[in-house]
Image (cartoon, rainbow, N blue to C red; front, side, top):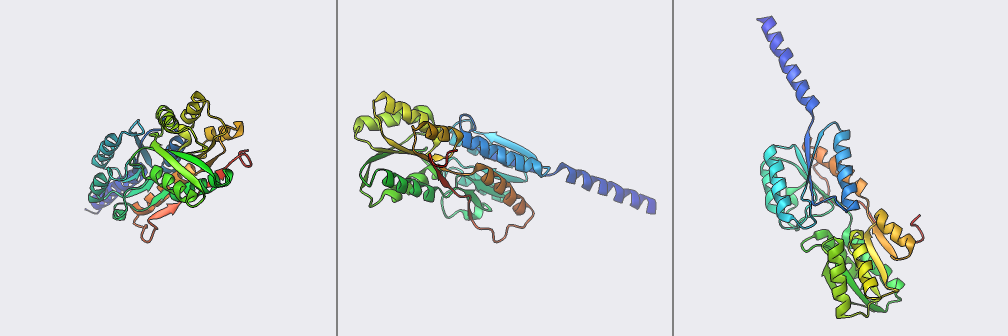
Length: 304
């Protein structure tokens, strides 16, 4: 009998060791990493942090900047697969709320990165780690006012409708130029992509070509904006963007863009996994609902 009991204990220990060796399964959901340097960096940062901990990374991509329904379905699939935790970059501040409620019901901890959801739903996630997009946009507006001497017309090429990050950047820019003498004469969504950004920039130019400054909510859209200016023979327009991507910095060096508000995807991704693991371990009590990863303006003086 003692031998049998010993054998059972050995088997149980082996099973526990095997389960431990398998580690956790962490899901990550975002829009796309195609032609989006920031999202690619963030994706890789999450993946690297998960795998460095010895856990399994499962990444799902909606493969479009605006495929909101696809993202919701993919998150639901991850929940049904029984992942141990989720890092989510929501494409729409409202659309993901219902599926996050399902994650909570299933006991799956969630950390949000880059983009958040509507206020009042902080119980659905451990923390939201991102750039303070409102503050970053405000610094861009203040810099624009400085560059234009507090005089001139400006436009905004926004992100996609429903994107909290894009909305915060645009709203912050408006705060930055408030009371400066600059006039915001138009703003339209570029959906984070080159072709749409070119189209809406041309639409705004045709509505009023007297433009001295442009705020772009992502470096990803800059080539479209520059093409629209070239197509309409507009020169000496001050452009400030957002992301701090390598491509944006190269445009600063070339003199076609004044500056870009840099954010830090590697930090956001690594912190996202760190706090998710704390949540899984039951150690996330008292964590702030928002953690700012910081920003800085890159221009010709520090573009390297």
